[in-house]
Amino acid sequence: MKGYKKLGRNSAHRKSMLRNLVTDLFREGRITTTEMRAKEAGRQAEKLITIAKKGDLHARRQVLEYVFDEDVVTKLFDEIAPGYESRNGGYTRILKLGPRQGDNAEVVYLELV
Image (cartoon, rainbow, N blue to C red):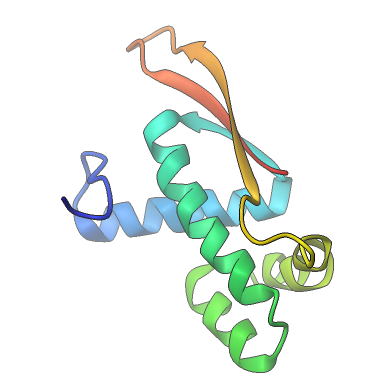
């Protein structure tokens, strides 16, 4: 079994889409997307928060490689990561909203706990 879903995209498009989803999640705190995309974006967000909890320069550069917006990285290091200092994982939550009108895809909220 492979460790990720293809999400109907080629690798470059999939990576870019997930980077956008994670950037928006850190910026807004909650995003609406499909269930499969939320699961994949949640995995990436959990890894980045764990890296950000270290708080050093190397960790900041690692996160900057993935997240598009420098302001979001600053928010991640200054506001988000310190709030999870006593928590070992489980930083995101998925809340189901029901099927989407057009194609019946399961729509969810992906939010930071």
